[in-house]
Image (cartoon, rainbow, N blue to C red; front, side):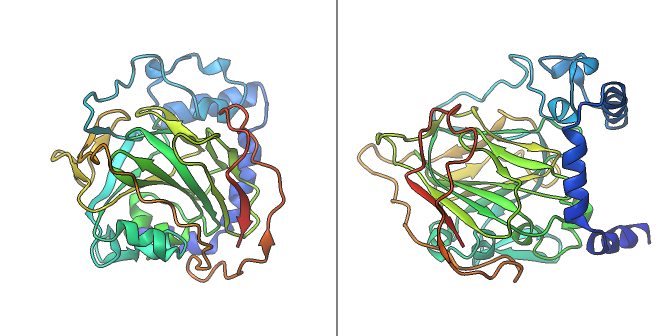
Length: 342
């Protein structure tokens, strides 16, 4: 009965408004009040501050500073081995396995479309048809920075607006197409194991999603799909990240989804639904591309499809807006192409 009420509230509550309010409050410097909130949160969720680079709760000026706290050196050793992929985040495995008939398993009785997850980009979806996926849920107590499973060169980033349902296990088991309808940031990388996608999924009260090369991607929440493309490895302005390097973060918790092309990786046998994950641990064993082979180029296409009928605008014009904030810190002068609004 209680679970049913919680799910109904997911549909009825003003999720966008609550998320804006949470984001506003999490950035406020309210001195004693902020410290009380941080202390209460850490106690309620049993946050292990011994792992933090700075374990003193009173030293954080805002809740967001506390929430995205870095870990101390050595807290998360990254698995060694050229063919070993590392877990991208702390959390728990929600689901993982094969992508079958273009669908990913969400929970008992629920599947969702690969093409819908990728905002209708059928050419991108084709690269992962019959491949593998993994979904990792980050609980409030977890470390909320997301890292690279392997070395990779960023080729494309797509911001997809959408709903802001909670992504906890109860919601995943009861809300159809959850990850294909929520707001998300899709990042495509060229790797030695073929193309890889890492998706940061938003949720209720997730104040923002950030990447190390673009800074804050959302908010603002403008209700349109935006797409950036980036140079290939070896070209001027290319963004290459190493295994275990931070690639993004959530300000309040959510979910990470990884997609791998068919025949390129095998997940570690100890991973299954509910397995606790620690960033840097053994994730999968990869099949390396031959030295002479090159990853397939990213198709320069414009996507029109949308998430659960919530965004239906076609391309209206190429955006003339400046590069996202934070690119300078990542050593990037500009994307290969300006963002497209869809």
